[in-house]
Length: 161
Length: 140
Image 1 (cartoon, one colour):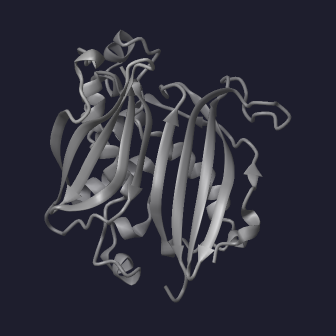
Image 2 (tube, each protein chain N blue to C red):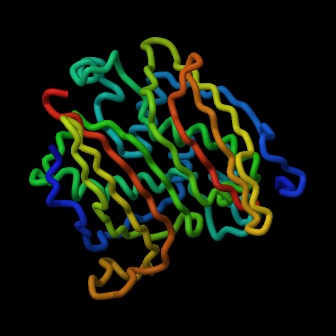
């Protein structure tokens, strides 16, 4: 059973993830995203972007790093070998582009256990921080420009499920 | 690349269909690209131990692959402002061989004032739905 005490927890902004051109190309290739704006700088700039544009689900890389702060905490009682992904949602406040430095504030929104199954919903609020800032100040009202919101629900089967 | 004209669209229009295939190498490539190394996506023994018939595709690989149809139709991948799905059935990937995923994209909602359309994706393997409630909000 996932530990219900974690519901409502908010983790401070984490160390920024640097979005690289080759990572965008690699991820786009892995999901078969052939649009030139993922691969070719001239094409991306032709659409008005500063640099290569990330595919719509690229933010999962950033989100899963943030989520691991919670998932891999032994006190959270989440057995990763018994986890299945239930749903996922990306809301893009602006497209992610190469050169972005992205920090994430992780929220554990909901933990519900019924019978032997726990459903855990997390929300990652992703912000672009200026490159000069290595670790966002926890006192700042917002860590930077709001770029994306990633919501994810995991289902965890208990030992007897 | 040209952008679709929102005034020329109607709810129910099919904007495209596509077949997406995965083999084991595709799963390994996605594991590396995404950083998701959960071994149920590349190790049959671990997958079977977890109660699965064998290695399954990352749900996020399926989600990430089926939306390309919409990005290309929109003419700008940055036009996808919201994208959501539910993972309803795992996609088994044989060894050797490929899993074949059928995708149909249909206009679900048109909001001319906001300049957005919602594209609904039907995603099936052998006629069985593998993703549910798959909705892509596109700004045109």
